Length: 624
Image (cartoon, rainbow, N blue to C red; front, top):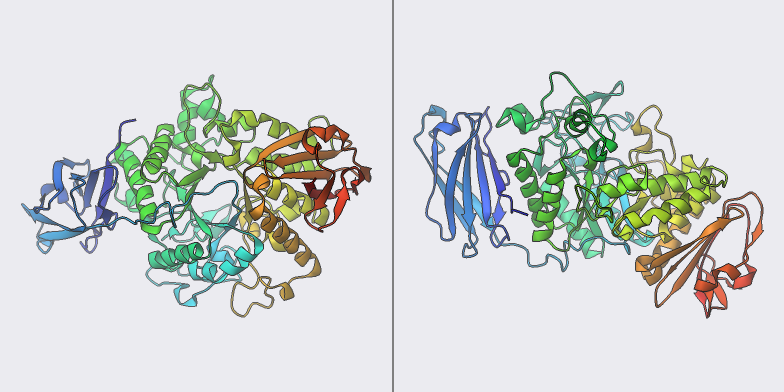
């Protein structure tokens, strides 16, 4: 694939004529020597920008855009270039206001020598991911709760549609809690700046506390602590042996992003005569019988009115985002990406950004949100085994089909294709993925009903789901608060499943980060997850081993995780009667073993003496 130009955007405010650099700096020694600077300032196209002599760096070409407020410079940074500050001279000044900007500097830094060693480690199936919303998790620094120079100055914990003040320092304060529970990886919903006023969604004025309304790709929102706080959070996590996943959005930006307020050209944003949302049909992307209209609508429609849809087929837009992705990894050193609204994006762009990241960081990993409701649709957007006109290169996906199958298993009776058989049949289609172990498995998230509510607040079914989550193939992800039985359906809005973690704020009446603040049932749920997760850390069979499943019989489902060192057996009774399990048909996996150790209780039983009560789940390590 032809290597794309990387873009450097220099934004100069149209109001104050101050100059900002996007990105704020770059590095020497990058695999791609090409960099493009975009100067954004009123009538800058009428000026000439010249690079003062700097060894190993040269200007190759200048470009003008449709808007006179932009000037582009192609740079080439050779391997001979050393860290330092480039100096640019502005001549042929026609704008009186620009006289004071005769020169500006741009810094080239040294790259980290720890990439792939202590940072940018990647995430794999031996990890356990904890998804949290920083604004709703813990407030570690009340001094950054609100700022008068931002468009949303509200802070009100009594208003579920407003910001509540959680931040990066709050996450740092709870790292020991997460590590003790067995978590190995933290995934925060986006921390990028969302300088947006409250916007109307589903009849409510909602703040951008969730983080998906970007207004500056190079700033961490200062209500979370800013760039330095994010660096400190990642460094603190790494020092405790925890990894960090960064949540990315390529599909759109917030209404107040400079790309929308003053675009370099009209085609940076997908244009429609009137507001046109996407059809939300992933089939419109890959349907061999589909229409151009439906495909265009899916890829170019605006998600909501206040999220302008980026034209990712535009080379300049695409490379701005590719460069930003690389900048984020080098600047912050997190370990992997989760990519939002993936199926709404231009397909070639997606492959290009993934390839560029891996070219620069071979250890970084990515899993994507395609939200396919069947295995074929989900597998289409990642590396797969299908012979298709277009082949995606993403490593893995959020496994929505498997999530739905688990819900089906725990809420419906066993039928030919329903109940527990839905789970069996969904896993049987893993042959469509190149490597299903790279998929992220989950029971709920910030866009879904809380899992405890989905299973009718039944603790046994809750445990069954957690057993599947923590012993099944793939990368497990737990949504914050599930471990303490946080509940609710998305009624009337998503905010019902995005409530504060009790104890994350000074003065909270209860602190559920501590056992003393939890009810007996909440502690039982927490300890169950903790026991499984910490066992999982040491289990080679569960972490990276193979999966073998058996067709459910009498509503009992059995599968094995195994490798050359260990075999783990999982049995789940989804029926309403107690069942004594006949293990003879499992000889393929049990041969040579005489007993099994219950990893929850520690009890050792003969293999032929396993009896399961209704909705009981047994997880055991086979013993010779």
